[in-house]
Every structure is written in C-alpha cells, then in structure tokens.
Image 1: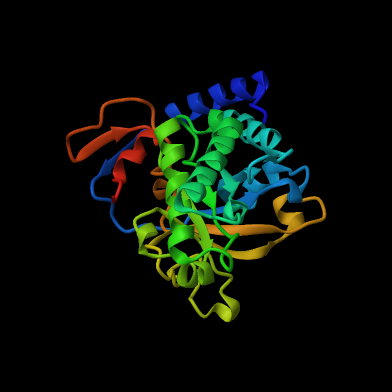
Image 2 (image 1 turned 60 degrees about the horizontal axis):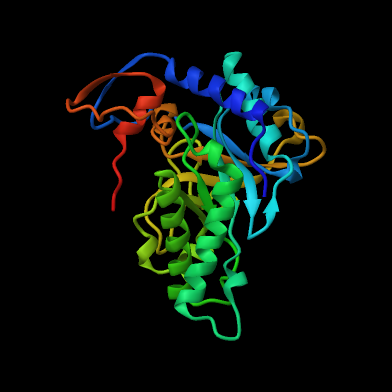
Length: 294
C-alpha cells in the first residue's frame, strides 16, 4: 500500500486554498430548486493519461477517481489524476474530486463465512482504502465512495448489505467522513436490503432509449432498495476526444442538482456549524446545506 507523495500533499494544500477562498455566496436554507444539473465524470487507470483541462472544457465540474480495489490493488493513475485536478483548480479550472474504492465482498467467502468473517473482510478493505487515499478524504475534496458491484450472486442481501455498512462505518470511524455508495439499478433492486437506503447514493443506469428521461434536466432512474439518488452515471460512452481520453471512452454523470448541490458533498473545514438560516459562505461551507439522514 502506498500514500500520496509530497507533491500530492502540496497540491492538496493548493486545492484546499482554492476551495476555501471559493466564490463568496449567499445561501438560504433549505435550498431552492436547482437551475441546471451539474455534469461530471469518473475515471481510473483505464482512461490512461487524461487531459483534465479538456475534461473541464467539455463541461465536467466533478469527478470520482478510483484509488483502490479489494484488499491490495492501488490504481496507478490515482495520485497523478488527483494532483492534476488540484493544480487545475489553482489555475481557475475547478473540478470537485473525490476518491472511490472498488469493493470485492466476494473475497469474504470462505468455507465458513460467518458474519464476523464478512465484517472483518469489510474492515480490512476499508483500511486499505483509507491507507491509499486518506489524504484525499480531507477538507476540500468530495466525500469518498464505495463502488459496490461485486458479489451479488455469491452473498445474500443481508450479507452484502452488512459488508457495505461495515466498510462505510470503518471509513467514517477513521477519517470522520461518511462515504457515498455506488451501485447499479439491478444491484440495488436484487442484491441489497433496505439497511442501505439512508446512504447517499451514486446510481448507475445507462437509460437505454431515454426511458428514464433526460439525465441533464429532469430524468430520474429507479433505485431499488437504495434511497434517493445524489449522482447518476447515465452512460459509459463519453467521447474520448471531447473529454481528453487517449483512445478510450469515459463514464458520464450528473448530480441531482446544480454546482451548489455538488459543493454540498465537499468535505468542509473544521469550523462550527452556523446556527442561522442565512449563511455567508465560501464553496467549502456549502456542505452545511446537507444533513446526514441517519
């Protein structure tokens, strides 16, 4: 396992400064209807050496970037991607970014997969995630994400949901930030139980034929046993040329709100929570507009 380099730490400081000095705004709580859904991407090793400036110019304003998978794998493009995004923010092209971990709950399967063994495996993966990406689970970055795709046919609903809750609780215990959870509609419908319904959801649904409406305006995909969605991955066919991907496509996403909604997922600085309904704030303080639902 590896930790970000000193260069990455310096870039992190630049990013935090940029967010902390973000455009001053007036915001009344609760928020009013959103003007336009913010657009974003998610990226990993498979996108290669991305030109993030092109990604920004294409309209992306947030990104989820893979840091790790399972118990041992670290994405070799992770630090490079996050450092580049940080440096761009200092130059005036802000993409709000956070780390995600591809979970492998099927690794918990043994000849005697007790509840204790499943939870121990989840905690081990969570610690791998934090050890790899913990420097990016701090003020100025988007909250981390558990990517849950594996194990649907191998563990039952209760086991998978327990694994996911244990993973997220362990991350929160270590860094003080509750992760989001990613899954597709089929997974949310057939493989989890309602114990995950209060988690902030990033849903994948490729919306064939536009059956769930226009993702960029008012469309909304089904979320099964999960709760309301906060982010929607609606296609895997983002243009390589447009988004600065060398010879590959990229997943495209929308937020369930405008850029201020996205800022609500930025990890805030350690400052007292405001008591009034009207807040004078920088971008990083917009996170106070959201309340944990559980």
